[in-house]
Length: 539
Image (cartoon, rainbow, N blue to C red; front, top):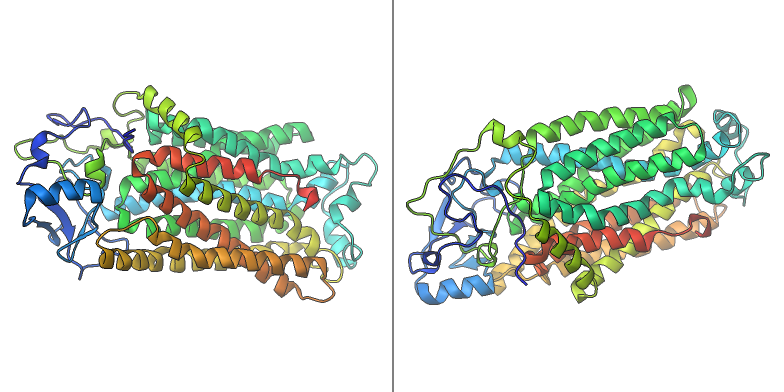
């Protein structure tokens, strides 16, 4: 089944509004857009186009045997021809084509989208680390006593602070406290099954904006909640919004950048989120003690509103119709046709083009049908293990650090998230530019960028995640024998493994099934959360 990655409102006089290029696009006159190897085609700066014009450094390679090479390119997806890099997907000359956005516009769009998406990860990791606060809150005690308790030496050794606090009078069951962190993960998985296919039907932009507003509403609701059930419902609403935006990040990026750049862009987007997580994480204990835990939600909602405004103005619709041949680098023959310009009104429009409800339904069906495709199943299972172990570590790291013998000061508890910053920087370097360089070098030798090239890049993050889990478990179970530095090192390695596997895995499934980009990403984004959902008290 041919499943185009995107569709968008065609420009005026665009002869390809039906998504099919004319037969002349397969004629002997086909020229492929490609970049000189000497240019920086491995980083973020490749093919920075404006309107309908290509860069001066963009060249066109004429095949020596056109009738044979064009057909071969349409099926073989060669990344290099005569030593020149072929742009995949092949960009059109339409200024509304998201591939033709300027580099600065792409970076602004990714910045605001990534920062907003960071709220999902921040909610899980930061609020997961603050579970002792909620245990006291819903026991009728002031959470500020945690500062005094930490100053007095912390909780007794070999005890679980949450189980210890659950024995207080009027304390809710420990499972309900853990649900504040774990239930949103389940909701994210379920919502992605519906909302990501909807992004295929109506466009990425309306889904991002609508779910973004939903996330802000959930934050405000959580901050004003007066009971644990109300707080739980608010967290689920927040998860539907912020989690969907987080899952759409790779989908939007693959619409805007070329195949050989995806590692750099996707890893950069996820790595940038580490900054927000660290800033909020370090400030969280101070905010809880000096103000209230409710201000964490209000601050998050304010930040979300700011970034959502940026998304509204700087993230245009990226849904665009492309054939399989175009995805493989064979451009349309657009000679003699004119295109409507990209205008400000077009950029901020809520909807673009027709509603493709059947495509959304097909995406949902294909999601279920392709779950057991070997490549998708492997990446989904790997991501499930990584996200489950990382979130479980996030739930248990704070209780372990405020327990003897480590007995951290509660106000310093936010520093436990510093390993995530180190992991984010490492992800940007190792699974970003370096991974693109590795995959493109292998592709140059083989002639085509095969999805299996990404498996080489997946080895190191996976090994780090496994070793980090062992170190984290050993140090956490035997705090008298290991320092908290060893404990945090294991946590950082787990975070690097999760972020790295997330980045490489997304690129891998996109390259395996470019015509099924939506269902492939839905599988990974949804089922990893569904499978990773567990009872944290068993960890």
